[in-house]
Amino acid sequence: SYCCTAPPCSWNGGMADKGATGNVACDHYNNWRSDVALMQSMGLRHYRFSLSWPRLVPTGRIADGVNRRAVAFYNGLIDALLASGIEPYVTLYHWDLPQALLDPPNQLGWWSRDQATGQPNGQILPEFLAYADACFKEFGDRIKFWFTFNEAWTFTFLASGFGKAPGLPQLSNMSRDPYIAGHNVLNAHAQAVDLYRRKYQKIQGGKIGITNNCDWREPKSTDPDDIAAAERAVEFTLGWFADPIFGDSGDYPPAMRRLYGERLPTFTDKERRLLKGSSDYFGLNHYATGWAAHAKEPGADTAYAKVTEAGLPQATSQWLFAAGWGLRKLLNWVDKRYRRPIIYVTEGGWSTDEDNWQTGLSDRQRLMYYANYTASLRQAIYEDNCDVRGYFAWSLMDNFEWNSGYRERFGTTFNDFAFGKDPNAPGNNEKGHPTAGRQVRVRKSSSCWLEAVWTGNALVHPNGPVFLGCVASTVFEGRFANAKEHSCLRSITVDEGWKTGRIYGVDGAMGGPCDGRSDTLWGPVEANFSGGTVVADFSTKGGSNNLSGYWNRARGSIEWGDGTTWLAQSSAEKPAQQGGNPLKHTEVPAAVLRK
Image (tube, rainbow, N blue to C red):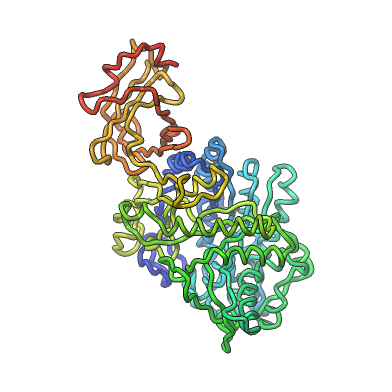
């Protein structure tokens, strides 16, 4: 059997980072409260994430039961986001397929087909629809922006022989397998949207769509053959999944039909009707650009196009070559071909390979990538009249980058994965096994630049006077008040070098206000600092031994991972550097402290 029944499971042959897994990754499952505090400190207002089908329905089959702990996890995350003023944008499927639904030869997942005709048979569709129905029912009262699939091209085309999982030999015939999988995915999308619109949309008031991906292909010359090759390269990537939904016919691009012939499956009339118009907006992931020239050989995608990237800056990822103008041209291509749909750019980003925060925080290349791409995005909106409603950076923090594991970092926040030994992961890859409980996030320069853009609602010159960069740890030196009980003060002292320090505080009796008579003094609590992040050991107070807090520049506060907020007291005296709890000798009347 293809299925692994007990960990550690052997790694997939397509893994570049051998032994790296997503078992722990960012440990978001345990750190989501702290991660929401991070978002809150950034002034974030929109956050895109995906639900995990295997987490919610471990066997993939609703009849076998729903994991209520997973439901509770997502409910907690969604509620915390909304309470923090952050709008969730939720994807149903971002490549994590329940193992029980892909077990050749009996279960073929998205690659299922009729053994007699070879045509896609949608074996997986009933289970996907049941999963989607459960998600709409559980979370739809609060989710107003849904996406059925993320990058179908990636998990069908690249996963059928180009290194992405599953990459099974028996499902890696590039002439047929990607298109069987893609056909099943499109029908699953259409049926899920139909279900949502019939059963939930009117009551819940949300919208639903799909996110596709495409790199721009610019003709290498003015030769008509190169121009045609570039057009085919875009059509056979983006048009493959967008034409049936946003086009007039509910079918694949005509050029694909001509060149693929019988290799391309056919839709029934009913399927076409369901597909056409089955998206309330156009989700688009875009990262890179390349030059396309006519080729004599068809290539894996039958586009007869050879792509090169001469003269374009390259990220750590071997495929990522940047050109902000490529995004602008792609947005115009979508705008014209599909008659001005509402567009959300749902991903874009830049990879680097730093493995420590000392070098990783100053991510100048990523900052300039976002500066150039958002400038081109603005041109598409205001000069070209494209109806773009949003841009999402990939990603909030460094994470598990699929077959690249942890060798490539896309995050705008540096994540110390606390690499160690994961007994449930294969091999002895000491830099491929994140561990839980001790991970630390620190914002990079790109994160602080993006904050300046979205809080000011305007582009900010990376070298101009408006962009101040990220804060230094010096911001934590001083006196703070608990936002829920202003009379109870906290004091933070930071040692020379600004990496370590101590926290002191005063609490009122029985958790009430501080009155200067029955208060309890506490501290010191040991703390570590890096940029706008503080990590403290509150275990002596019954709290976490690794609690993270993040500086909120707009509020002048610390947003802690346990949900508390400490407000800086700008009029307070600077606390003593040494000599015990600096609040013990504070001669301030209780009435003033309670103000």
